[in-house]
Length: 114
Length: 115
Image 1 (cartoon, rainbow over the protein chains, first blue to last red):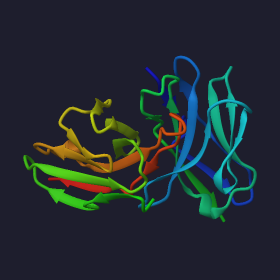
Image 2: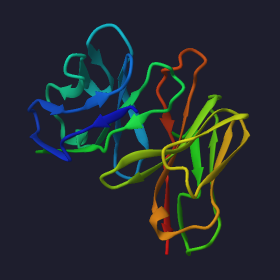
Image 3: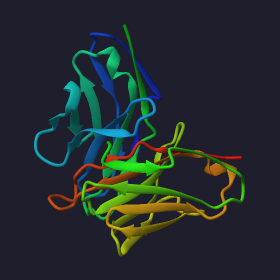
């Protein structure tokens, strides 16, 4: 069975500092990985995905993620955090068959302090 | 995303009552999904549908049923609601026309409280 782990319930960073939100996965075959963001009282919004190709994926709002196959990780990063980045972030994985829906991690709350 | 709508947005009901949550989409997507979100657990898949005639159970389908009335509509029913079904429920859609790995688009959610 496929699974995703987000080891940090919350990440705190100061505005202007780089941020990293961690994600590791387990799946048979090639992984297809996604990051979503949830703002208060809103549904999830897609940020970026890795299907194949370059290990560094760029997405919305200046976010990027690095795929590392040997470490089975897909960490979300941003060079300079904004207060408006404060939200709940979810990593998700789908297996290579495409028949399964996404499996989500438990979420990491990002708090960016002014 | 305004293209995926959910009704009602909030609902309070009593144990044992039947309740239906509705999802409609104008995106023309073929796949639709129902998730529930609980604090600390992330999103867990209840049911998903690849088209009107293809409905699949997710990881937590017990106590729930679904109906795909049309490509654009996917309803979730709780036949006899219980308090541990209190959660935030999300509908999502995706389009496999160009890729089976396209991202999902989420509705705004329905907050359900079962007393």
